[in-house]
Length: 254
Image (cartoon, rainbow, N blue to C red; front, top):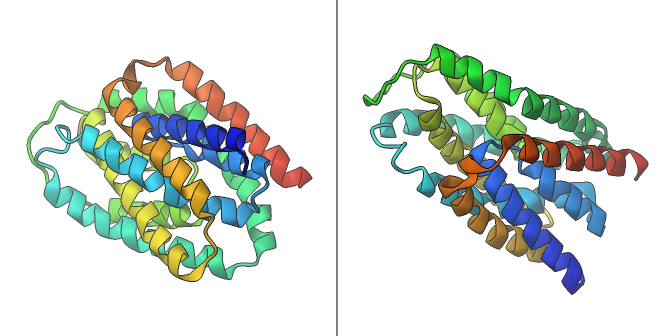
């Protein structure tokens, strides 16, 4: 990796941190960049997931006011996210590399569809949610299993993991969308961290890429939590769709 490529990876990390904090799917920024530099798909995926953990953490810190009163709920859902992240990592390490290259383009297409549909989903969720700032502890079995499944997906690949979590919680919790978004940041960080620990022990990690993305995503997470909600969502989604299509082309062409 030369200096220009390093700057590009760091910049992609900042963009991904902003997007993950506000919407989710920052992986669709950083993953294609790592592929373009020449990292193998699985190494790129593993290093990307590890690098994005600090950005999710800083995003969660930026949303700490919205987390007030939600600790019991977050703890219950966190267990599902962590277990799912570990399972997803184990699947990634044990399935053939060819399976990853075959599956991921399909997952990216699914992620892009979710990114495009997210504004309509958010509008529907906001319309059905009541203003509710009271502490809540109830987590339905369906939601817990849904977060588990999303954690598995996140441990395996992770693009639009946050969008999926937003959709699940928005559909199954009577809560304001910003408070749900705060939980999303915590769950994404935990799923990525859990899978990352597995990868550190059992897989090859491109540590320079991890460091660059980690620094960038940490900065981006703070920016996203503070001012990212003021950025034009259409512009962000447009960038995500473009880089997602680039990633698909890179995987299919090789």
